[in-house]
Image (tube, rainbow, N blue to C red; front, side, top):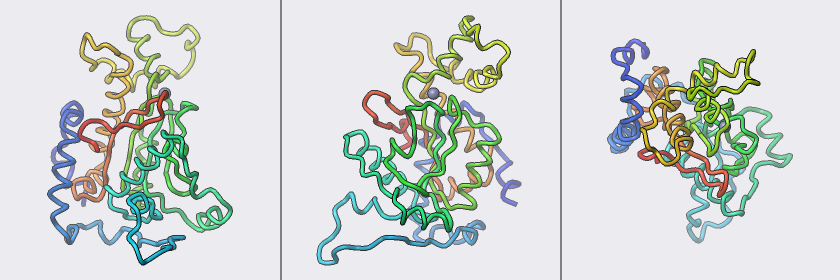
Length: 278
Ligand SMILES: [Zn+2]
């Protein structure tokens, strides 16, 4: 049903990348004015019921500080903007050297063993320096993570994301590209006619083929071609998620899901959402 409706017009990939953030913001803003949250949404009844765990207000006499507001327990169906705030707050702690390492104890382990309700889904590179639970300072059961070199979105990754949103209640998908990504660099080298001799006989070219459109889209004369390709590659992946999954696209347009691209800086530890994504 949903897919029939949304297969009517699937925008081109390039158009999606260029207008992606602005369109999502506009859709989100429009729907934010609807306090009912879209009563006619056919998917609304499928959202798992929010379940709060471990949230123990310490004091009722005074309002909690701002950081406490975003550091609530993740619940299925969390407002996408709140999920984004929680994620970025965690990265801010990590980047500043004040990681809280939450939700890593035995109590948490026992709790999530009963079931998971990750508040966000992350697509990250397999690079050993880009571990999502660390760079976002989150714990067990907080993030649904798919990692593959070059943070590309193939069918298996997209299916995983669909599962995390539809069945587990995640309301935020972030594609995290990162500074000096080896997969993107290898793609640039291959396109420049200097492929690695060591890659012969491997499947590494499969990744390069998926990253190549972003590399080719880097405008000539960019001062840092690799870094521009990293950002574009993440944006293309986010656009792919939106364009190739009718159920996820329906949720984005209904303001129930946020899909963003971002770049992780290896040097300072900061995650920066793409322009128009935050
Ligand atoms: Zn990488």
